[in-house]
Length: 128
Image 1 (cartoon, helix red, strand yellow):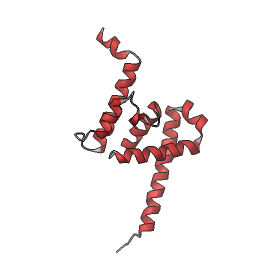
Image 2 (cartoon, one colour):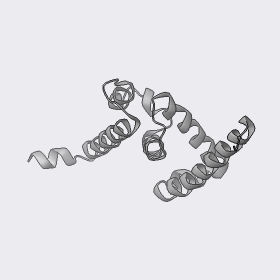
Image 3 (tube, one colour):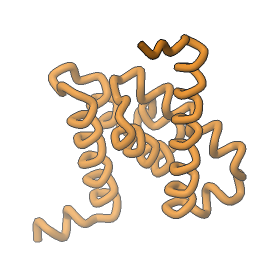
């Protein structure tokens, strides 16, 4: 029987995280070049690590869910979940009626786009 030691599991997890970070650097760089380019890769990587940790605190642990969390973080600021101007974000992240990391990420994604549409005045145009 194959036995995997704790150190081996940690090494696998570290490689998996590094691969995720690499994919996110490409993804975030494509979506937010004006933000990522001046920061440089090491700083973006640190922000990704911060986002992974913060997302996990809210039960968002799937790759897709963390990607959504990071997209919102880069769009609205690194401390978006504590920003008093963005109460919808905190409300979603602490809402215990939202069961599961993908449902929470989907709710965050939808609310973020609604907020962007509202900020651009698109909701007002729909009403007229």
